[in-house]
Length: 349
Ligand code: SF4
Image 1 (cartoon, protein in one colour):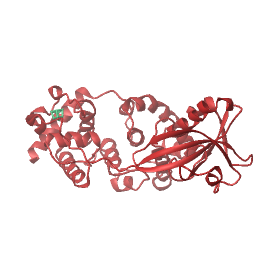
Image 2: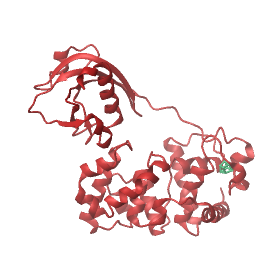
Image 3: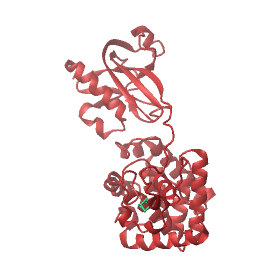
Image 4: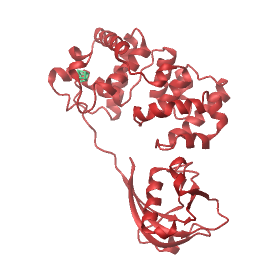
């Protein structure tokens, strides 16, 4: 696209955004911290859910210092039900870094932002442009889709070459923008509300006159998808002990579900015996098989073999009342495992 197009696109975006921006809680109180907090929450989670939860988050953690002081476990608890708990751990670690390295103030320098845990190029660009007005580009799924359609790009945009192209386009756009933060936010907003994946509302789009895919009628084919990621199979034997209406959970110290509460699990073959399952789990006794639960993540296809268990009294377990599971940092996979155990073994509750 020529430079004149970028300045005209950003002008149209900014004008449209000033009239049509959604009233979202983090936009009412825009500070560097609310920008960072909202971007961390919004990654891979629907706006409606974060709209509900954001005020409570801000009340509990009004500053980076408050979050650092509250501790990782408090952030994980507040994050319950939002999934992708790695982001919660990173957010807390970022708050600690902001306190230790930047005196409790979110830095404005994009390089300093990117040095914070969990802050990549997108989040750094969003905070630098939205909160500090800097000419930093942003590219996320919504932006990628709008840029691909504007140029009617017929090659994949989610791969390395495609993403590099998107960042170049987004950079040209903020360089041509009058207000880089507004242009960036408008671009994201357009992708979220008008230029949606399946049914873009081209008739209401401020960029319709400049859009290549609209001219070609190819909105349904653009962006071109890439091949789905390979999902590796994994078999986990989950040991569930339920006693007096409470279930024994362990806080994972690493790997998948790090920092979250899950039943003790052992990776073993689907045909492993109870003795084989507990070989590396001192003091634990695996009982009969109760159920199987399949759970899919982006990169794994997990089969849980749910077993009754007898766990050592001295173990490092958190006994969580069954009725409180959804109020604790228990991932969806563990909830399904526990529910399968309850269904198969109702006498346990
Ligand atoms: S005209 Fe349609 S396809 Fe093009 S950017 Fe606007 S909503 Fe998207």
